[in-house]
Amino acid sequence: MEKIMIVEDDNKIAEYLSSYIEKYGYHVIIAKDFDNIIGTFQDEQPSLVLLDINLPSYDGYYWCRQIRKESICPVIFISARTGEMDQVMALENGGDDFITKPFHPDIVMAKIRSQMRRAYGEYATKQEERVLQREGLSLYPERLELRFGTMMTQLTKKEADIIESLLERYPRVAGRQDLLVKLWDDEMYVDENTLNVNITRVRKKFQELGIEDAVETVRGAGYRLRITWKEG
Image (cartoon, rainbow, N blue to C red; front, side, top):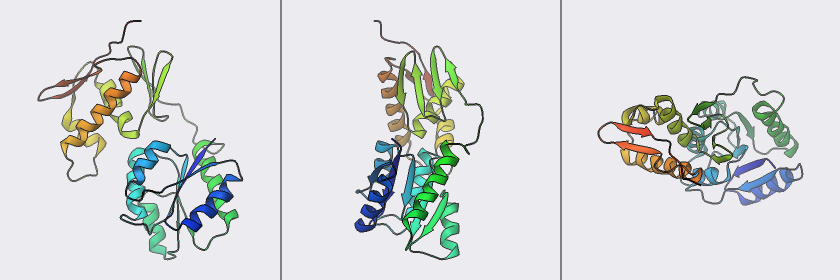
């Protein structure tokens, strides 16, 4: 069942949207932690996001940018803001469509269906899927999947980007600076510990596939992929 994530701080509107959308066979997640929208997104991996602009802590533009670092899933803004610049800002920050409040639920559903068709269905761009393969390991960047034999694990966008760099450089070293630029090329400054955290997550993904010590730290240089697996 496809998931729709609603990010709306007016609980009445969120519940109204949820109950209406669920009638059409979708599973709906209503975000509750407005300080960690991206955490909810990563946990739930929705197919589409309905996103308000005026939110506690950070606005919808900010959260859309964070989502775009993880996924290309459709994001539809829903807001009481009616100015042309608000709609421009929504699109400039990674949104796919814009709905103004008050709205008719049928319009919301029509736009959800339209975006789902464009992203996943009959109107989706038909192109050959990229697959990177080394030593029995297969990375599907567009699916955010890593496979080894009959086993498969799901990835975040950043995990997939790191593994893609390691596979492209294999058996050579992928430089730390190259990884930082690939992952955060729009950031003016990134704490290198952030890369360490993501490398740790990537190592855990390989362990889920039975591959031990998959990412070797090369002091002063970067990281190198080593593909060895558990016996039996």
